[in-house]
Amino acid sequence: KQEVTQIPAALSVPEGENLVLNCSFTDSAIYNLQWFRQDPGKGLTSLLLIQSSQREQTSGRLNASLDKSSGRSTLYIAASQPGDSATYLCAVRTTDSWGKLQFGAGTQVVVTP
Amino acid sequence: NAGVTQTPKFQVLKTGQSMTLQCAQDMNHNSMYWYRQDPGMGLRLIYYSASEGTTDKGEVPNGYNVSRLNKREFSLRLESAAPSQTSVYFCASSEAGGAGYGYTFGSGTRLTVV
View (cartoon, each protein chain N blue to C red):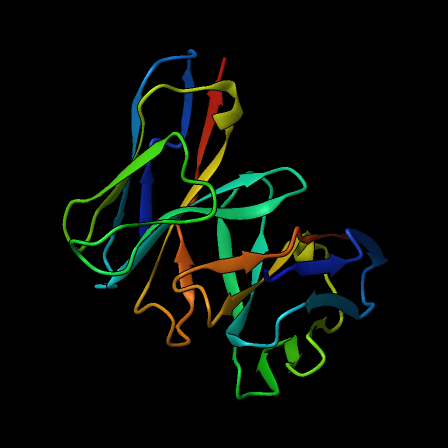
């Protein structure tokens, strides 16, 4: 069974620092990996989608890498801002379970001014 | 605005009551999903619908039923609510199933069963 782990569970950084969020998964047979942002009491907003054949995706200050063979993805957020405070979730879509995203429990990020 | 719309946003039920959570998407996606989110456990799949006319169980289907009414709408029903079903419920859609497409999520329904 695919297991997805996000470490750390919580992170606090001063404004301007770069954020590094980690996601690991146990089964490398995936279609893709997706990073989401969730604000308190809100739904999930998709940030980046990395296909299994890709090594990284970039959008503005966000960069996500994928190393499928080692079961790892990293989300980098450059020059963090207080507005980046949220919970970040990663999810993998595995090839052996149609339609199912396996989620990590998330990393709660606080960026202090 | 294009996206996934869920109703209601909040609901309080008494144990044993029934209710239906509604979900509609206007992105012409084929596949739709229901997840629940509990503290410290991430999101877990309840049911999904690969395409109009089909539904299948996910990881935690007990106590729930679903209906794919048409391509746009996918509802989740609790026949006899239990306190263990207190959770935040998210509906999502994607263009296709296992082919590497991303998901779009609704804003959630916060359900409390007392």
